[in-house]
Image 1 (cartoon, rainbow, N blue to C red):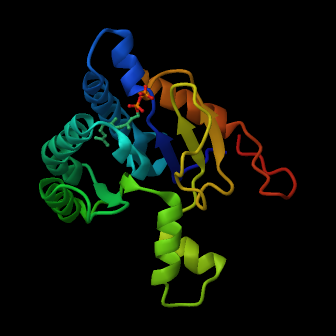
Image 2 (cartoon, helix red, strand yellow):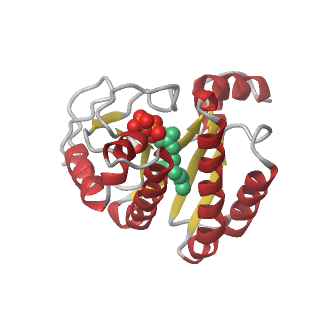
Length: 224
Ligand code: FPP
């Protein structure tokens, strides 16, 4: 059986090291990382992915040098401005998760425009985590809940459960990403750095995922 309508979440790690190894400035790694984002977003719907959540900037990333932070925001803004129209045409709905109030006005405007332009997309829900902290999101969601706090109401407020979590560059931790949503996620860690990650690696991760036996605490439920 082919598992479809998957929620795949990716911690895109290793851009800086990829660049440093090549004697390039760190931002060159982020720029190369945008190309990996493009490939993965384009391939995702044909691979059975209906929700793709990318960790683009964590709350903790504010501690990086201001130059790097601003360059990253510039890349993100450029990506949104260049891709939103094509995304709308391909049925990709773009949405940001995380805080908006601390982002530069130009980036938050680009996000708003991309969200509006792509709002009707149903082929792929692309969620970009920006100024994101899962602990922060949990507290916010719980505070904002109009209905009683239950597992269902909190899940509803936060977003869909993750099926497969991928992290590149050899690190094996969640770094405050989708803590609640990953309760039953499968994990795929690869030594490849994010700029080296493309459709082949995504396909390999999904193949491996489809052969895993997801039991959710019960007895065998074979996916492949
Ligand atoms: C982690 O690598 C990567 C980031 C903090 C930024 C990810 C952003 C992009 C790939 C660019 C734009 C994204 C979109 C959605 C268009 P790192 O810098 O921590 O690498 P290191 O651990 O080797 O230093």
